[in-house]
Length: 83
Figure 1 (cartoon, rainbow, N blue to C red):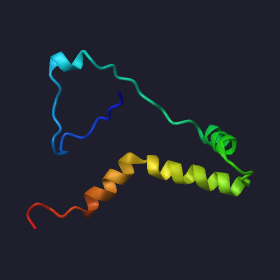
Figure 2 (cartoon, rainbow, N blue to C red; figure 1 turned 180 degrees about the vertical axis):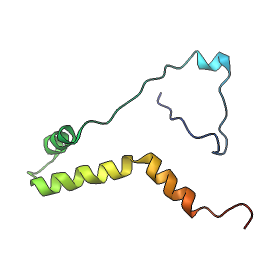
Figure 3 (cartoon, rainbow, N blue to C red; figure 1 turned 135 degrees about the horizontal axis):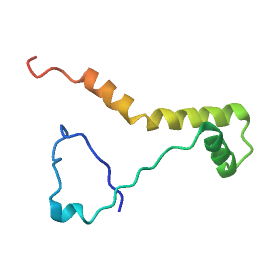
């Protein structure tokens, strides 16, 4: 099973009880560096993509992986509670 840690402000989030906490192991997954990501894209491609296409694919993945940036943009768009 894979789970994510959501901010406490999200609906239906809360602390796990001690009985549930002992059933999980926290691991941290890190992204590869850009060179490793380019190698993965090149190896998995069904064609022979040029370096520009590979670089753009890696750039798109990195943009989607910027969760903190995405949440910040969403927070900027959210109207204030007193409005």
